[in-house]
Image 1 (spheres, rainbow, N blue to C red):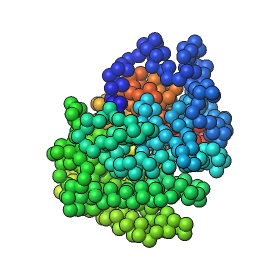
Image 2 (cartoon, helix red, strand yellow):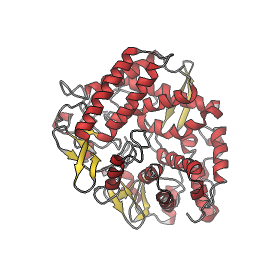
Image 3 (cartoon, helix red, strand yellow):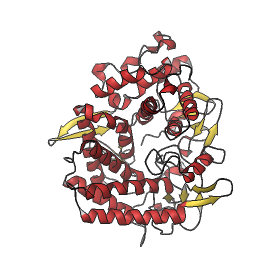
Image 4 (cartoon, rainbow, N blue to C red):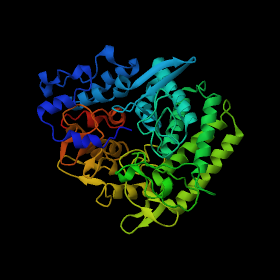
Length: 486
């Protein structure tokens, strides 16, 4: 993986000249500083240079922009919402089936997590756009190929003969794998996508023998990482000075006591876990295992053995969660732990990536008004979370991946999406407007005291997720968007 954390060191405080270079991601941006910022010239690539165009998404942009009174917010929405389609997708027909390779932005690799999350906000529009439907169907097909290549890998190349820059990692690397960091959510996201596509369309044409085999591999991998009898087949080590890229004790991580929970060697931020049982990811697994039960119980996909395996595993993880993942905090009462080891030890923080504790309602893993979630939410959005930062530029959650004092816009977006408080949503959107660093796009992170210091000038997931927030707000809280002084 091209290190995301390198960008903050190189970005620095940008002068006008450096900012012009930083923002020249697309051909259409080369002359942006010939125009006053107040004119809000579109930052999208010219139509002929866009990777994919959806009539339904373009119509939605026009419709929702009319609801937005603040011109800068309308401009950000138009730039960000279609960014995944504009810049990151590679769609083709392979062996008679749609195939869609989705890069994460400035890194030419496809993460199982990111590829699902990037196209997720477009799913509500697939009934209006057959081309968009085929594109998403192609993502499912590509993810199936990736899982069959290696269910423990998190990121892949389009060309399965390509050799990674991380080929010397001490793990079972294969051609076609960009990085082999085992993360529970890497296998949860493809299930989430397949289930939602199925619920929206009823189409099962891509759920063929290969897809079913990939789902069997998901269950097998989850079982192996429960570590009931042994540590399983996966280890990972890397020669690095960056602690969160390495895994101790011969690449297995620190000891865990089997309890039903699934070990995740890495977090969704691609940082190694301290204690192996990463609770937000286990809660996500519980949710998607229920999806597998539902799908394999349906008339056209009926498979009693798959239902049995998914149900048994889900119940074991739920039991482990209740016994080990819920703790009593002296200030906040019962809360969800971030990481545990099964021996009674726990690690309390939250990370900015998804799944996080904050994002659990967004993933369907808990209700947004659940007392347990609300107690934990108070903690993670306070100084009791070591990675919650407040500064001159804004407040939000960061994480070890981008270093101290860095806030991820994604955490601010998820705070708004999971909020039931209109004022909180409004404040989050206001912060996002103020912290795009004069680029017109979201970033991976920005410094808490200076939004002009940011990492990743092209991070499509954050862009599209911001668009999803605005789409949701236009439906649930239109008065917020009608306020020009937001």
